[in-house]
Image (spheres, rainbow, N blue to C red):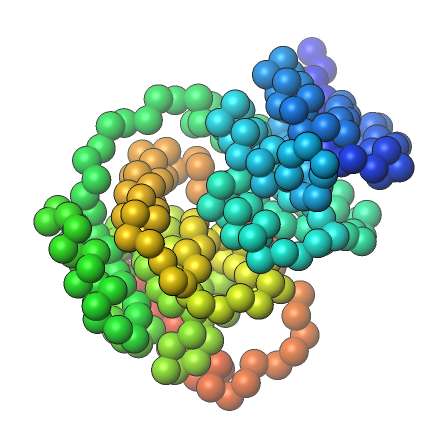
Length: 306
């Protein structure tokens, strides 16, 4: 018996783009299209959709709102934002609310888009059963490694819940030592530390340790940089400064539950596969030194877990 074609749902208020997508992908996929976010969510309720690809700027619902609704209605559907507008609010929202797999900017390259969608469909199919399994109830407790220049951040987190086991580090080296000792910990980190920008280090850590759940707390607002954090580091949350305590605590609790879910259902790790780097720019010497240390620690983590 021939397996049913996977289903893609494209959401965009430009009919020209919807026609292009339908023509490009209908040979290999069942293609659904919608120019209205509300209609798209209704389609999700009535069809088994493997991947939803939404534009951001639309008149009735933004793409982030569509993907947030998609996450609630059909959590097994892999979510992708495809947009020509790299707005800070939409990028942060796509991470925190939509929990997206990729953030793709227009104009897209069809070959690369097809590769991404093929990968997303495969992941949706591979993890369908795990997604459907009920989550195990867990208390909001766990290990948290805080990598930040100010100790007050770690103290604030520890004060909120005595069941949090909080480790504090001011350098990537010290944070990695803590992660070796506490391999199930989540990592809460700033992007810019005295040793420099650690974005590439986070990407490498996530590539080698997909089970690592990372929350970024930062005042950094470079949109292209944040897009890389989605695609290449699969960060779980981005928390812009200044940060409310409620947002911080809610995000930590969500991260701890997510980490437990990945432990209970290892198949879900594929949903956090990172995009390979295509940047030909050589690393600055300071980054090379940092990345070398991170690779060493990751090897130690691998051998200690074996």
